[in-house]
Length: 229
Image 1 (cartoon, helix red, strand yellow):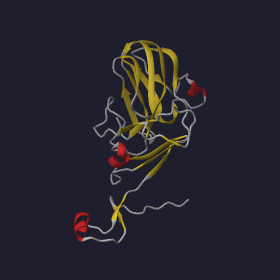
Image 2 (cartoon, helix red, strand yellow):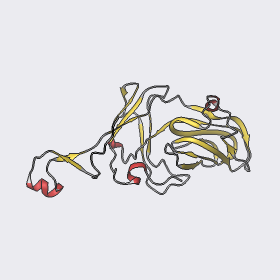
Image 3 (cartoon, helix red, strand yellow):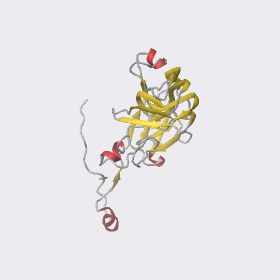
Image 4 (cartoon, helix red, strand yellow):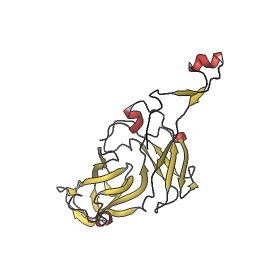
């Protein structure tokens, strides 16, 4: 399959129709041509609350490294610490603490996310891989797994840039939840740098496809978001 960039321009126009007042506004004949991108997420697995870590203890001084310690369902499938698609992390434990998850996004960039102080956590960032887990206080019955918030490969600036969203060939864009990319400097408590979607229909090996417009394809930040942290 051959690939070729059409243009490096930030805006493209099509057509030769001309009207002087309109040309004075756009500086081009015709109308703006907006590129629409297909995002094929494959067939995401159902959420797995202990897919990374099956119930066990972790001390505040310890680092739970997924290279050696993970005992969850994903590990059993020879996918230690790796999710099927970029998606959020969920966790639960006994004993009030802050849990910090460190891993990689779908482009291999290091990213981290920390929970509020408590005993449960539903993350907002989409991780492709988990590398280690730490807690601020000793905990027991710790489980860590995957949720149903899926990451996007490009920055979603606003929900209006979603043209269509399908699960199992059914269009459900108006009933799913979309969160735009967080453009503030990334920290452990900011949102996903590119944005996420939570399907209305629970994921369970259903074909998932999204059509979107990327507003700013002329910069790294506009394309894939601010630098991860």
